[in-house]
Image (cartoon, rainbow, N blue to C red):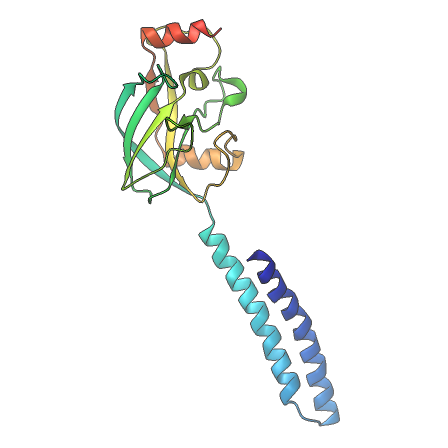
Length: 204
């Protein structure tokens, strides 16, 4: 689609000066002006279509960030996500919006995985909104970082829903989105249980 828009715009920029020059020559020579007028109008229309459609696509493809409400938090018992946080929540985001959970605290011990969307489904894919609801697993090792941990230790995480977000679940959140996410959501506080702290310390 982008290539067609560029083609429209390029054709417009070709037809427009040709039409203008042809029209001027027609006035000077007092010949028929219908054809150069058509070329001129066609050039203007092609440029207009290209620009308008590009602006529309930019609006449609803009990433939208929605706040969420966390209704329940569990400690996961399944094998893959054992001891991770399992959250259930609601949002006004449309169906298919992706749930991103991020530790945006630059002082966190999470190091290089700060600002990664650390929520997944049981199948380790993007959690998505369905009928205003969602479920997601939060990876505690990525949320808390590699340091030694103890029961009761907490971390603040931002949980949002994203539309038109096409990055991989393993990609870090772009810096230009960080402040928007912080302004669009309140940080949720999560605390470690004894079993979670023991599990994290066993990974060191």
